[in-house]
Structure formats: structure tokens, C-alpha cells
Image (cartoon, rainbow, N blue to C red):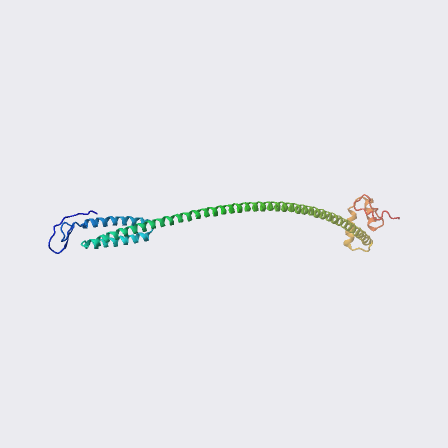
Length: 295
């Protein structure tokens, strides 16, 4: 702020105050008196400086605390408005001075508030940084614990898997051993069954052969007896008289076919049962049943 001093002559009239565009001239009735004259330009310059300081404080306050910045802005606007009102009433220099002092005080308070807000913001930032660091440490600790738990779970799972694999291998070996034993038992049972079946088949074959032999003997005996009966019946038929012409012709033709008289006579005697032929022991049809009996 620039202070100008002027020397005024004493005028015999009532004191008056003239307000110019650039300067404020105060006339008094005392001769050779000197009073400070405050120009509007100086007041506005001072207000601008204060507004600049308030703006800087506002910017700093906005960075750290938006609420203090808003309050500083409102205070700045109020200070500018108040300074404008005080500029219009420049004739009241005391009011201007008081306004200046109040503005300086306000600016100091705002600067102090901005500093306190800055300190509070820095403190809060430090606390948040500390909390973030503690949270980071806690997170890293938790992550380490979780990693350790995961590793232990992995080891336990691998151990369990190994035990299960071992148990499965043992179960497989036991199952294969059991299957081998069952296969061996089945093979032995099969061999025993085949042996038993073969023995049964052999015995059945012996039985069937014996039954067949006995049946053959029975059939042969029946055939022999039937042959004896047939021979007896043939002798009876040969000796039967009289015969029909057809039978006589048949018998005559049978014997006429034998040219040798001796053979013919032998055949006739044999048919009549006069001569009996002894069985040939070498013949397949020979019956040796009664050979061991006494005559």
C-alpha cells in the first residue's frame, strides 16, 4: 500500500471530504496538517493481494480438505464483498483501516485454518498410510498363512492319495491273488469234474457194454432157441403127411436142385431129423454155454 502526504492550506470553511477516481483528498481546517491519504487503487491492490493469498490458501485447502477450501472461498468472497463496500465508503478511513486489519486478521485466520487443515490432512494421510501398511502386513501375513495351509493341505492330499493308491494296489494284488486261487480251484474242480465224468462215462460204458453183451447173449440164446424151434417145426412140417400139391412140388423142386444123390439124401435125412449136424466150434455162431457140462 502506498501512502501519500499533501500539504493543504487552511480554508475557512467547514471540513469536507472529496473522493476522486484515483485518490482520496481529505481537507481540514487546520493549517499545515498532514494526514495519510488512502487511494482506492491501493485498497483494491491490497484486497487483490489478500484475495490471492486467500485463493492460494483455498487451493491448498481444496487439495487436503474440500470443506475448508469451500469455507475459504466463501470467506474470500465475503472479504472481497466487504472490501468493495469499504472502498465505497473510503471517506471513513478508520473503517477502511479496520477493514484492512480485519481482512489481514481474516487472512491470517484462514491461513492458520488452511495450515491446520493441511496438518490435519497430512496427519490423516499418515494415519491412512499407516493403516494401509498395517493392512498390507496383515494381508501378507494372511496370504502366508493361507499359502502354508494350502501347502499343508496339498501335502496331506498327496499323502492321502499315496495311501489310497497303496491300498488300491494292495486290493488289486489281493483281488488278483483271490482270482488266481478261484481260477485254480475252478480248474481243479473242472479237472475233478472231467475225471468224475470220465469215470462215470467209463463205468457207464462198461455197464452199457455188459448190458449189450448180456443182451447179445440173450438175443443169441433167443435166436438159438428160435432156430431150434424153427428146425423142430421144419422137421415136423417135413414129416407131415399128406402134403398139398403145392408143398409137394416145392419140396420136389428143392431136392431136384441138388444133383449129387449123396448130398440130396443127406439133405432129406437132415430135414426129416434123422441126421443131426454137430455144431462147428470154430463158427462165430457156436454156442459154448453147455460145453463144460457132463454128457
